[in-house]
Amino acid sequence: DAGVIQSPRHEVTEMGQEVTLRCKPISGHNSLFWYRQTMMRGLELLIYFNNNVPIDDSGMPEDRFSAKMPNASFSTLKIQPSEPRDSAVYFCASSPPGLDTGELFFGEGSRLTVL
Amino acid sequence: LAKTTQPISMDSYEGQEVNITCSHNNIATNDYITWYQQFPSQGPRFIIQGYKTKVTNEVASLFIPADRKSSTLSLPRVSLSDTAVYYCLVGKRYNNNDMRFGAGTRLTVKP
Image (cartoon, rainbow over all chains, first blue to last red; front, side, top):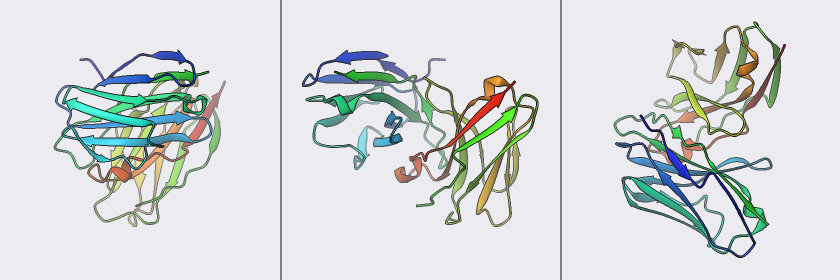
């Protein structure tokens, strides 16, 4: 049973470049979350989708960040242009329907380094 | 939004029972309490969830007093592999604010 799949696992890029992170949620899950984790700020919720619709993007740092979920099995988080302060581990998580409590299932993360 | 407060860090030794307490004074009537575990270089992993009294699974126990203003995660007979960060979350899934993680408790198990 495949879990949440994220790609790439590691990315090193230079400041100003566009970065696209990808996530495939667990089949049948209808909620998807993007988080960012750094030593300084901990685990931050960036955006939350429910049934492919963005519900709250108030955690997205600024206009350089954008997220899409074109269908139930795929989501992207894009940073354009990237900056060194965007260096972090980005996690995607999904959650099944039918439960108010909503256990989150996390991917292994994408470690981004912006030089 | 039910805010949680946990100790920043705890130390223990192999074989001991570890209890991590989370305070959530503003918990709402229909809020659940969920604990996650995160190892280095991995995403958080669900451990246990409860609403009241006591919940036990193969990994841990969760104790919730009658007023529900706090909860205690109990890890029996910890091993070195239990060294991780433990997060307490309170709320409901459909309120995305409730899916926000605090600083967590960094547990270090020593030999």
